[in-house]
Image (cartoon, rainbow, N blue to C red; front, side, top):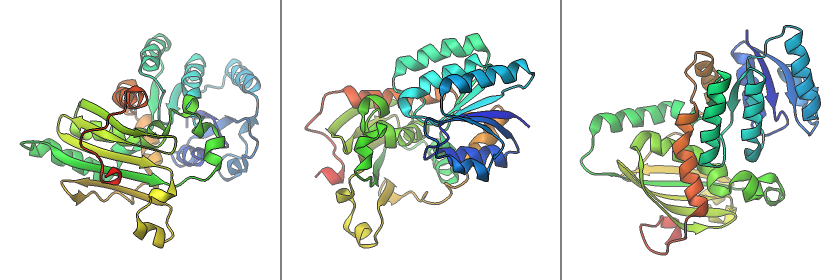
Length: 310
């Protein structure tokens, strides 16, 4: 049984981590969040110590260490811009880090973390759960075996409606979230890179606060992508059903079915991390470069555009 601490216990994604820690038969000894709405802890680890101030949390971990309690992992579920700092804290405490995506916001953050990881001897893991989805694994195996003569044509569409709260929260602040492409798209870009190989071209046609669209060319695929949190962008048939999310990936006009099977992917991620097979810094590097470019390159007016832009 390994000892965990968790930073960001009141957040949306924290219950998936709590469940994974519990269902892999490990123990949460301490949790931190500046918000105290963390009744969810009762369902998993009611005896975990809880803190709303980082300094007291950090001191508590130090006291446990001096009393002989080993901290093995720190799970990080905090806002994107704090990941870098909290990863460093985990390594200073002699623990491995398990961090939600995006691991960091900028490519140079990864370079610095490589040095710190080497110095500490501990490992930085990130959650890239799409790489563990059975349908995605099957697609990668197919692409690897086929060795298609030419490139696959891919359309990625992801619309996940968000209310007015989004702009007020840290997610609406690009300096903290990285913007739409980073916040809701980074795991898709990682998946595409993992399946189709290195990026050869990155073009952005639309970059607004609530939506973005562009074109990515990989070694083995041409990808037109569209991401949005604006419910007005939902297809009519989705609105009629009263649904607020639409997710579609087509490959050569064939729909990739991966709508189910997400429930336990954090559990699988933790199982692999505990076996020493977690996704590390090098696995995250390419997707972080992609989203950093999407944030910063000039907008183009011509090229292969997604159907939703036409």
